[in-house]
Length: 166
Image 1 (spheres, rainbow, N blue to C red):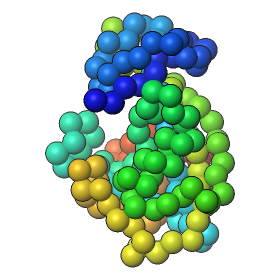
Image 2 (cartoon, helix red, strand yellow):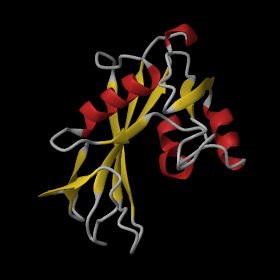
Image 3 (cartoon, rainbow, N blue to C red):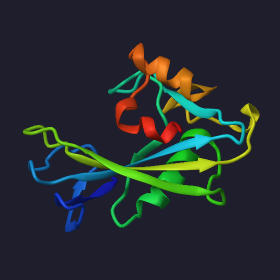
Image 4 (tube, rainbow, N blue to C red):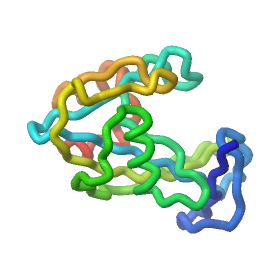
């Protein structure tokens, strides 16, 4: 069973934990997620497609990421998530913390902060090894292609992370 730290509105740990996906948060409590924008040296971005059986957003394109485990730092979590979902080891790559955004879902128990990072590395398609439970396809796309996919409703969280593609 995975556990996540519970944070207050100032993104400070409360000392309490929640079970992963147990949407029990009060309106002024949050969990933490991290996203990793992976950019090649030529300016192309790695965007995986969520696996068809996923409960939320199946078939949608996104950047790798996931929940930050209890006691884990978001940078460590995003390195872990990128590795799990894509097979790429970004631990030794240039890593930029870009920004944090948050979402509030009053009465639903699922409020969260999202720390967004960008990694730049040289890799080829043959280096990507998808975690089939999470993703079932990927592509390399430039910022314009991602923007177009977002306009078509095919790319998750674009409005919240669009500045990461500059």
